[in-house]
Length: 242
Ligand SMILES: *Cc1c(COP(=O)(O)O)cnc(C)c1O
Image 1 (cartoon, rainbow, N blue to C red):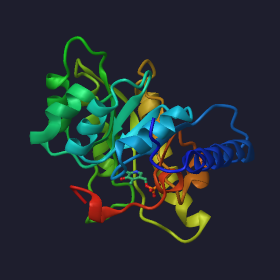
Image 2: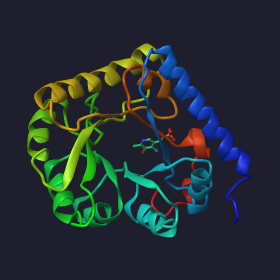
Image 3: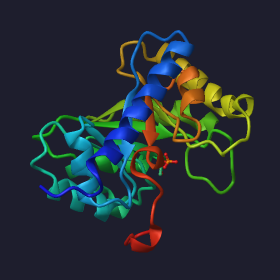
Image 4: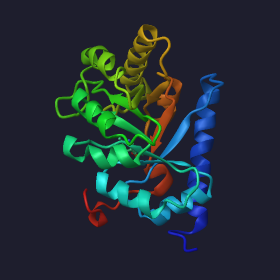
């Protein structure tokens, strides 16, 4: 087979990322695990294939058409798991409901309803997270923190999706102390949900990217979404949908 870059490159970067995750878990006295989601947006299918050969199984995509194309191109890869993490318009929800295993970026009830309606009967329920605009930035998508309880109460009733937890993309901040504030707020929101729904599968805090991964793990992240640190910087000029 043909590799996208020198085999060692993605392999080395993945190894370093795993080492950082282990260190962050150890430093925060956590005995549980964190799922590494390799964010492959704008990267060719061959890069994903290469990472899969290095043992990476979970991949994150931001754009519907690009993601679906890769899922089809890579349907020979056993055990691969696809997570949709980008903004989702309701008129594009069907291919996501049909092809992905997870959606992290559900930011309104309408999208959750459509995903549930459109999830094919022969597939297990789609795992979803509610995206929260945790630092209340005007420009950003996501539910307001005070909306989460009400939306969750309705989403949890939908038949073909499983509410797994919360996701956020905090604004970049300079220090670890500043990074911690929104991450801790998201954790508190998840704890509130878990208290209200003790029998649910609410086990997921999707937070932490290349730049704030260690802080996110210290604050209880269960899925870190890492692109640049694994695949290198993104070349948006070659992407169909920047
Ligand atoms: C691109 C992206 C990431 C990965 O970002 P890096 O800084 O490259 O690690 C994570 N989460 C979301 C929602 C993204 O869009």
